[in-house]
Image 1 (cartoon, rainbow, N blue to C red):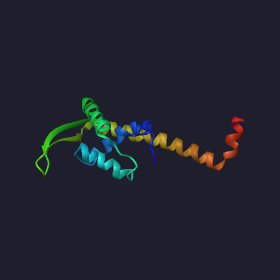
Image 2: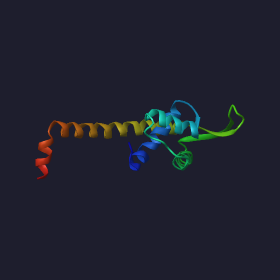
Image 3: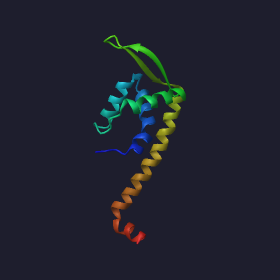
Image 4: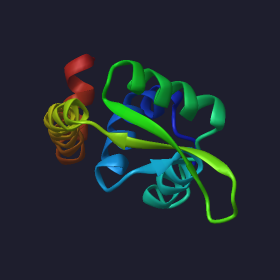
Amino acid sequence: MHIDKDLVAASATPLVLGILAEGESYGYAIAKRVGELSGGRMQWTDGMLYPLLHRLERLELVSSSWGTSDAGRRRKHYAITAAGRDALAERREQWAVVADALRRVWQDVQERPAAVTERWA
């Protein structure tokens, strides 16, 4: 299934902040976690993820530090900040409103598909 790029973009910040709320991580692991959380239906590219991480860092929602992997490679690790946790809580509330509205409209359409069609006729 293809997920529209507008949905991917809208969900990117809360996903990254949510993943980092679980603990600090690095780019590849964040992208892998998104894939796991979506059952493999969302695959983020470096070109999408790293500009987002840099923007979140500029906004002081995440911080970064250099570390070394078990294999000896240098990696930039990202961690959520207190401001990032506040932003995540706000995004969670916003998404709850959006998800509830979508659930309601889709439920209404399922229960009364003819009424919706007639309204526009």
